[in-house]
Amino acid sequence: MGRKKELPLLEKVRITDIGAEGNAVARVDNMVVFVPMLIPGDVVDIKVIKKRKKYLEGKVLRFHEYSPYRIKPRCIYFGTCGGCRWQHLPYHQQLHFKSKQVSDSLTRIGKVEIPEVNEIIGSAEEYYYRNKLEFTFSDRRWLTEEEVRTGQTFEKEPALGFHIPGYFDKVLDIKECHLQPEPSNSIRNSVRKYAIENGLTFFDLKEQKGFLRNIVIRNSLDGNVMVIVIFFHEHEQSRKELLDFLLKEFPQIKSLQYIINTKKNSSLGDQEPVLYHGLDHLTEEMDGLKFRIGAKSFYQTNTVQGKILYRIAKEFAGLTGNEVVYDLYTGTGTIANYLAGSASKVIGIEYIEEAVQDARINSSLNNIGNALFFAGDMKDVLSGEFISANGKPDVIVTDPPRAGMHEDVVRAILQASPERVVYVSCNPSTQARDIQLMSDSYSVEKVQPVDMFPHTHHVENVVLLRRMKK
Image 1 (cartoon, rainbow, N blue to C red):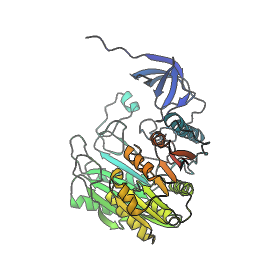
Image 2: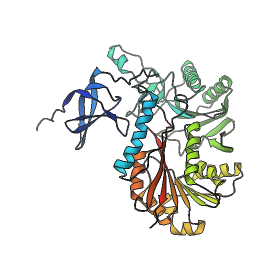
Image 3: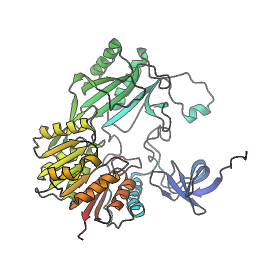
Image 4: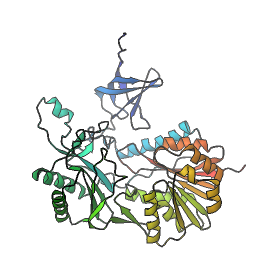
């Protein structure tokens, strides 16, 4: 058998750009090279780890020059945790590359003509902007590269923190995270300390044993907190003592819930939270409307930027009060209920039944009588019969998941032929692909990027599509 061909070492390569998934870009002999965790201006030696037809993937072996843009990351876990991978890039530079990602996607992937992209709307808060985080318990914390290099033998220690990217069973112990406001850090650190002092076992994902599994912390802008503790099995006395400890230590907790999840995986979609104390929801206010957020409800993770995103969607929809609006992938009906006051009727469609129930609750909470919600697979629900029964849409708002819309859904939109389509996306490349499928009938009129997640490569983008006159 022939030996596997050794992949090359590329020396003194200058990074020139940042690509769609947040990886740095260099060009060597007309070949594109993607490398994580670098920024334009860095000069490095790169070890190629994967060779593709049109590009290479590599990792840094040595720095020759550091980019003049580079700043000191705020987080002590930068580079290990896997989140906030752009903390070494000044925020105004992050916004520049996010905006570029939007225009590149639309022109290169979508191959559509676009107007000048509106200036990206940055987040007022660069840190502590999230209203929800989930932490994982592990009986064996992940050792950092620095610790491994010391050659010391470390005792097996428990961890409460984030999964290491690419490792389902490895958890980095987090003492301080800059993503969610207090009391998030205090709650996590207090629970870890209490659990260790009281001999509560942390979960072993490989062996499927242990008591403490996950903890979810949610907060609202008014300072109220929801905590959901997930246990692997029931032990009534230990569970109650831990939950009572939380209530005593943190009076901000207005909703305390727990889940006994005995499954192999940690997904909570099929689990039923049990209310231990307080309300089963938090309430968030948006431009005079109130929204109930339950333990499993979806709500924009950056509350302040979420309001801005919905205001843009409303402005792009151009409602006069007479329109029938369809809101696809409506989730808990936030956009649908937000638009209802300016429309004749809003129809929200969502795959998850529980989310639709939340959407209806949010309608009644705000005395909205002209929003109807339907659960089911988008491509099946959005049929000719459905449109005949509920009225032809003047405007369609669509806010699909990262994978974008199914081709059948794009076809259904084209069939319904609304005057305007407002496409809200968390992934400009799939948004561009879908817009290309509509480009014979719809032109791009406005493009507005919004940054929801500082220090990450993620960017939201709102596009207004207008039906072309034939």
